[in-house]
Length: 196
Image (tube, rainbow, N blue to C red; front, side):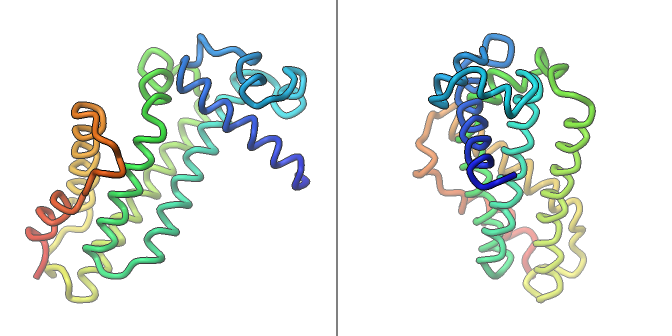
């Protein structure tokens, strides 16, 4: 796609994130997305065949952006503990940015909205994030920062579960501002159990 066309497509997807996040898939209307994107309704159909395709492309956009951000953050930090903190902060920002979408759209009642192909891609991206986290632990073992007997797979499961629950508690239950959430205590608790 040309630069201008790609910018317009992204503008539509970003508007869709807001509208689907506020209304959910079934209540959201293409007209509302067009208004949010400040374009005509027919323009959306120049880029997407309909609401379902736009919704699926929006999910792909969100997940690809998230995975890219994780890679960028981890490439700019060193040491296992620092990488875990950076991972947790990025994860918390992702949760905060898309909590409305998760609550209103990607729920059990609307999971049939997403095609098998997109579900397969989401699973692949989840595995990529998990492998990245496992790689942090493997790097820590290789550098001598972490215990040699550490099972990196189990460590990754515990880390992602703990980080998820920690941010869920802080954001969704306590209503904290994500900028004020410090993941260091949860990372340090895990890190103390696995360091040499």
